[in-house]
Length: 177
Image (tube, rainbow, N blue to C red; front, top):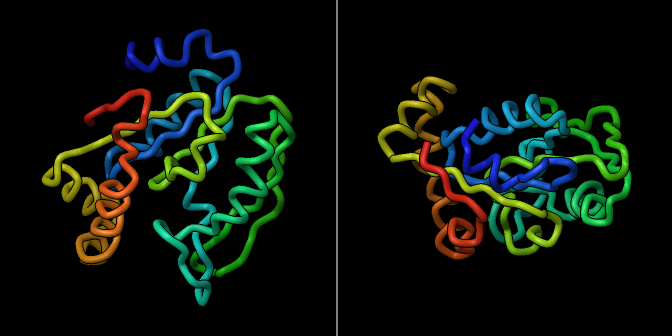
């Protein structure tokens, strides 16, 4: 595991870590590795995707009010967390997932360091990747046919967020993957 991350998390007894970064930078992969090492829960921002027909507010296609109510406010207070994953394909919510009070949690995904979310974390990481490597990874993960959506919509939206909110500079640690 990266020594910089070990130093950041310290003893790792209890932490609330945000992992933000560019598409294809390895946020989900890193979150999984850290969860295995530290025995903590991972919450994916993709599980809070905005349902069809709902208007987007600001940056990110997120159900921000639900993320705040179900995860970030309880997390910041050390309370029990109870949330439901949203499935984009079926436009439905899954069964409740309950995390005990005071547990260590990693929240991973683009937009996790939006200014209105930052209060909830004790630590933050930002992962970046070169445009060339980003393209290779996204095509490998999603296929060439879906690359166009990333190139024309998701990446420009993400870059606008990064320029406006300066999440790279806010993060405790910046990693190039």
